[in-house]
Length: 390
Image (cartoon, one colour):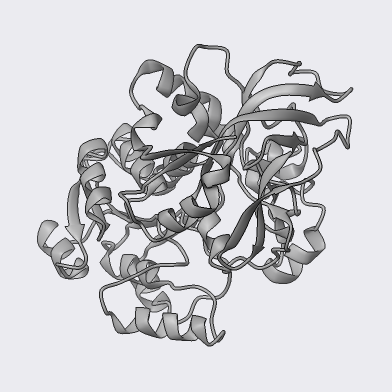
């Protein structure tokens, strides 16, 4: 089959690789009909995520048609149409039974490696480094899906692929980010970043009772989409000082809830901390660029909540933890507990309250994916979300 394969920093190629096979009785094989490039994939493309090996197949936002079914699978059959979540979870361990699917104790075969880096291992995940299991991803013609009775969501309506594809990751991720923000009716919610996850976090904030949403970015197309889909007031950080502007907009109190939807590759307009982060990363003296998280901790009102769906991969430097402690902030974060959110959010899509396809800007074939990674990373050509049809 054809698949998008990682060969090193800024080096992804469409290669011919062996077709996946059933390994365990709980597996299915899915023929991919649609998949997407995620902002988290860019951390792999840019060389931030440890545990990548040349030959790894990328992609964690797939859907398609079941073509083979393991002998122990009870809920799926051949020809079922499914969305596959990026989180691989067993459904039976201590964490899965609590609904904490991204903390699954069972699904990561490389748990010992992850424990050395993080203290405890998170779940396995598709297309996202050997620290998370080394599972082949879904930017390919076919995908092996373990624990098939736990993960894939069967789509039984006539909704198009592009309406349900983002149930694989970014819609639930944006929703959980808003839920983690602990929004109370009428709250002011500030969202750093206007990429795909941020766009869903803004829409979800309204669903959860926000009274006001403020979006922070520098890319005109993304800010415009935040105004249109997220009904957000906007701050362009190239033109305005974020802390000062947020103080003005909230009468000096600060936003009630702050969402860092950027993560480890944050940019800023010439701030000293961001310049130092970039230098340390270049010299291999640091891992993550944490400018947005620092700014959110300073900006959030006393007693507020900072929610962190943006991916971080290592150690953060000069984090204003004293500010967080003395202001009484709550920090909530984590990979998304996908299986908890997929079905309820499918019902929201079916009701017409959210149209996930509205964020798509680029539709391509698999062979165009290497160039699309660069376009997406560099925010060129108005690129916000890329969908691939293998």
